[in-house]
Length: 170
Image (cartoon, rainbow, N blue to C red; front, side, top):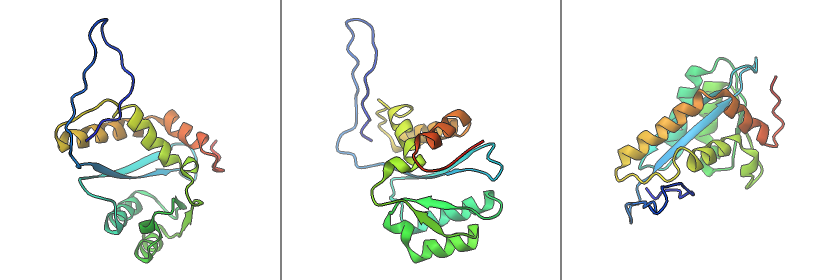
């Protein structure tokens, strides 16, 4: 619920005031996948929001099952080393739904993960200076930011291009 404070503009002599709800531990957790199809023409961003919950194994399994319904054929999954990503249950679901196993990034390498650029863009852009007082407002703003990003192919491609991972597009 605490806003990511960025520099802003206001009329001369009118200092902007950011009112926020303090001592609130409510949050919106998100899980996402940036997918490159075999044709390499149009990228897809899939996401799921979990208001006031942490992402654990059941949420990852649910996300992978949903992802499996949208992706045809096998997929290569590249993840960070979150303990839940490395669980036996998640590995089983990956094999069943996507027909693949996960490849893991090196320990602490957020710059290699293109989805980290998605989070950074949303936090410093669409969600910057947003100080909601209700969890529903934060969830709606996060959903709106993700949905607008889903339609922006140039920006999605820039996240992949900025990552030092060897992912070549057309």
